[in-house]
Image (cartoon, rainbow, N blue to C red; front, side, top):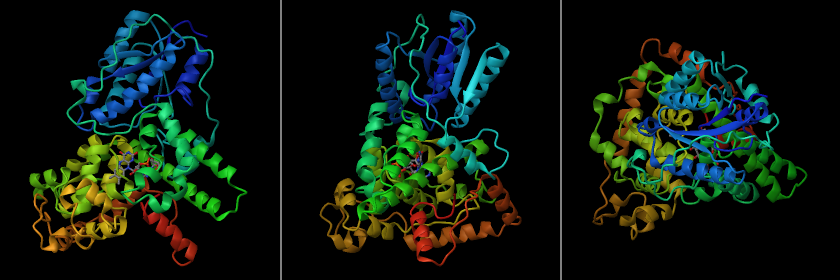
Length: 509
Ligand SMILES: Cc1cc2nc3c(=O)[nH]c(=O)nc-3n(C[C@H](O)[C@H](O)[C@H](O)COP(=O)(O)OP(=O)(O)OC[C@H]3O[C@@H](n4cnc5c(N)ncnc54)[C@H](O)[C@@H]3O)c2cc1C
């Protein structure tokens, strides 16, 4: 036991349950639970008030919980190294505990600065894995097993009888509307907090997840049938291990039940578990190669889109004014709600990247600000995949009209978010320009689908022909690619597997 305080630095792990740094720190002596509000972090191009809204809910709930024990969460506003310098001046020596974070370049540099400061100030720093992402991994071979072992190891209860270090000064928690958090509107985004997270998890496993596979891509109903746990996992109000464990436990409870309903539910839960594994798989890419936030994974695609950049295209796409109803409905719904389902994310990024030929580095930060669940490792890897710049994934150019017919056949979702088309007959809802009617304020299509796709295909083909292209792809695959074998073509079951996978990413993991 140590009499010096043990500081637990909360970052994107805003909970007390299944929290290794907290459990370890509490076993060593009195603790301080610290959250640092870093103005420079919140000024980054990928940060937004939506994230703060969620984080603040989590911190308020945690703070309320601690008050029951007569202590408060220590909030400090400032740059991390300065905060630790101040704490050292106030408290003397301490030990520091935190989870490893795979964040953006800014948090990577901040963590390095804190590590250097700890080294030169004789402060013990203990960092713990957050999920299945492995730091300093030598090779992707064998990664999946390490991930699975970690996920299935014992979950940690919130520690009991914790000794808190009482006399530590705290700043006020900034409000949701504090100007520090930028200009993006909060909108109608998801609320944070562990209680909310557990309610969401329970309702998914009890009922909402029954039709997960068939509803995951339907923009009008996916908000109900998807888990909606991504933001809780991103900011750590739930640990991904507990989400996975709860899903396995539900599967176990259904294991002897051979009713058609139960069998169907189990299939849906298994599909859900594979998405949970993708979470770590994608973040591992950023952990392995942090510059994928800025550089194309395959160098042949550098410089391909920049010379063609059109600010007016970027603005039309961002504001839902492209003239393609489903694209516009998705973007407008995202502005309002901070979330759209995977297929619609892939669709709007594919449209921006291929039809409008916009570089992913222009579009990714804009959606990072709009997504409440922004997780850098998933976000940048997915942006690169959906823009065709990885060199290891199949190129997917979605047809926005076909997607609209397939996933919003009656145009209910479109009409909800594009009121200009409220009275458009079903026959023309996916291609209103064909109706011959005057469309009022709604724009004509910004580009012609066939012409835009022809151009994009040719450009990609040209790059594929660059000298050394295949060798570079091999290197990308070795460093970042999945080791999971794709099912062979042929049998019905394999075709079904392929179809299920193709709902999201048939080519990776
Ligand atoms: C361009 C693009 C950007 C994306 N950016 C993010 C992001 O910033 N943050 C984020 O959490 N997800 C991101 N995704 C992945 C996916 O769309 C979201 O995880 C999912 O829509 C979140 O809703 P949910 O929790 O209801 O998902 P569910 O379908 O219920 O999935 C459960 C969990 O599995 C994980 N997951 C699901 N799909 C994927 C996937 N394709 N790749 C990796 N993990 C997955 C997430 O942790 C998610 O919470 C992105 C996808 C695309 C195409």
